Length: 208
Image 1: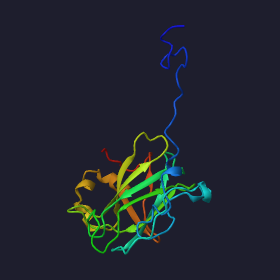
Image 2 (image 1 turned 90 degrees about the vertical axis):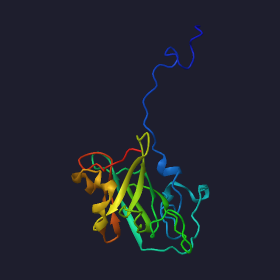
Image 3 (image 1 turned 30 degrees about the vertical axis):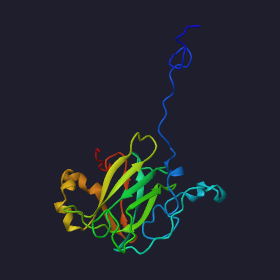
Image 4 (image 1 turned 180 degrees about the vertical axis):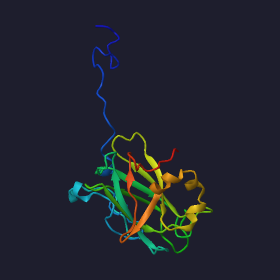
């Protein structure tokens, strides 16, 4: 036998099949309460994936008081054909109501959250409407994880009707015809922001 017959030798293994990344993000990474940034609840995890006796992940504890206007940010993650992605994960990171990324005295708000998507591709966060950070309009940073994505996709959520959107330097970098993909529309439940991974209405994603 040739000494070259090791795990790099096609004589032994041949070409390995191509395999996408995931799907696993929605299963082991979101935790109960991870999508509720203002109170104690189980929002965020796909609880039906875990028998209660097997659920060993962190469960968010009750928080102290938070300052600011409580809002709901919700939507769906859709693929190139407009079909829901049921095994994605969304992370958000944002400033508090005062436009700061650190905890202020008397305010227990911590602006990080994580949510799995449902079978219908839906996600939902309860959070605070963010304050302006320097000259930037109120916004929430969003990361998208999912099957076939070698690295996370990064985007931003801005809010419909905010006058300061016009002067935001980051939003100004986006062609005007595409800016609408970054604007969350107000509805009866809060603000709706759909993430479209490809297609005619593909969400604008930023290079890191």
